[in-house]
Image 1 (cartoon, rainbow, N blue to C red):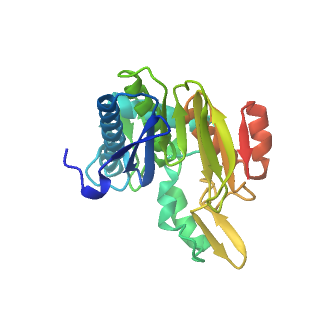
Image 2: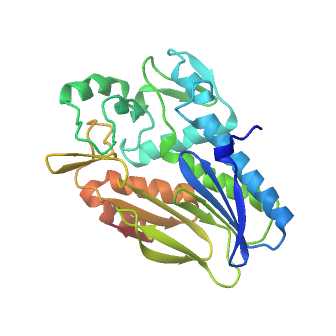
Length: 295
């Protein structure tokens, strides 16, 4: 694999553990390893970077030569998918059903109307109405391993991809090393354990400043929010969290939700589900009986 200079991973020793850094999925990524073996640290960092880049290459909607592009350009034909994609499609279907249709991986077409770049360019209703016929998991046909997507519809696994990458990377590294490890991809975190002192994790507020420090021995944290993706027009802030049924941002959603769970995938989907509940976000999280932090 040829790695561009700007994506070369970096490794250093910090406070007794090795810290590896690299870029993937448009996010800063870190691998913390509570080990003393430099050679092992290098091997683990290499495994982590290659797994993150593999997942990014395979599932990114921004690429035109991967399996997701093949599905999105299938013109209504049934496409056979591999076991990994089938697993994520199964999970996506479960999320759609559990959220009563609020979590929908076919809603990515709405970005043709919405660009959450901090500007005041809010689309009109006609633009959104033109896209809604191409949104709806109930319109696809999924009979594993064959997936059929109607013409002009598309899927986007961005809502679960990074959290999946965190969990997959940790599992891969644990096959090589049983020492305490922590994976952090853009604030989505999974720790395999801690020796002595727990890991210290900072939770950022919507301005990017760390306002809470959490101590974690083992488990995962994930955050969803609109700190960097929003529109602002005439004093009204429009979150990037869209209701796929209406095509408009969810009303009165928290600015940020962080959830703790056993895996990063679970934590991430619960945080997203909470945002989709709008002003009922905290009530939803209380019913789920999970640890959470809301801003």
